[in-house]
Amino acid sequence: MSLSAAQPMPDSLLAQVRAGDRDAFATLVRAHQGSVFSIGLRMLSRRDAAEDLAQDVFLQLYRKLDSIESLEHLGFWLRRVAANLAIDWLRRLPYSATRPLEEGAEVAAQEKDQDLLMSRELMRLLGELAPHPRAVMLLRYQEDRDVAEIAAMLDMPVNTVKSHIKRSLTALRGQMIGAKLVDCEELP
Amino acid sequence: MNENFANEFERELRRRLRPVEAPEGFAERLMAALPPEKKSTVVAFIPKASRPVRQFGVPAALAASLLGAVLFGMHVANERVIEEQKGIAASQQLMQALRVTSQKLDLAYEAVNNPPTAGDEENRS
Image (cartoon, rainbow over all chains, first blue to last red; front, side):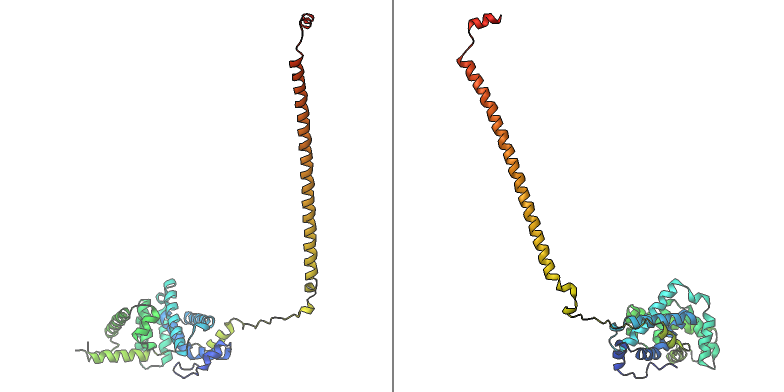
């Protein structure tokens, strides 16, 4: 069972990890594994690839613990590395082109949502976005990060982040309405 | 597009994009894949008394320098002997050259002071 990233962790935890306390490191992993794995899953659309990516991210963290300044910085660092690593992997292997729908269905099934079809379609549409806009959307709506943070994480201008969000939202809304998965009665 | 609808859509997106659980046992597998702990390096302190090599260090250095000095002295003396032998040889060659020159001069002086007579000429022909 993962700890929630929002669950408060003592400041001394990072010092314990730096001192070589492996149990403390495992606590950090459990606190952030859900977010890192979800970024991998929704970027790569495959559970096996997402687990490999998450493991790679945490192994990098273990090697670079000395560069982590605070628990807040840790959260930023993990998401930054996960998103950029996923973009790199997508450049090398077109994961999304293989089987986005099936894995998206797994995500949706886990949510046990009544509207399974909408979740499934949303994951499929998200998987059709280009890697950078997809990462932007995940950091914005999955991780609830603001545009300035996303710009820093993905090393892109703030206006580019805003533009990706606007275009992606328009595209997603349009396709969801087109598929009659969104109630558009409120439209003028 | 209606602003309420846009906000509602974003809310829905957030709800459906909540992070999911990592696979069961992920943290355990990761911890097993971590590199082994760095063992602290123990630096052994060996007292000077227990280092036999060090006990002979100074005498060995003295002996080596003494041997070096002797060899250098022998080399210098040898060079000096060779130089002396070269000087003697050069002096002997000079003396020999002077002796030959002196004999030549004596012959020339004799020829100038005692020129050959007419009888001598006749006897010759």
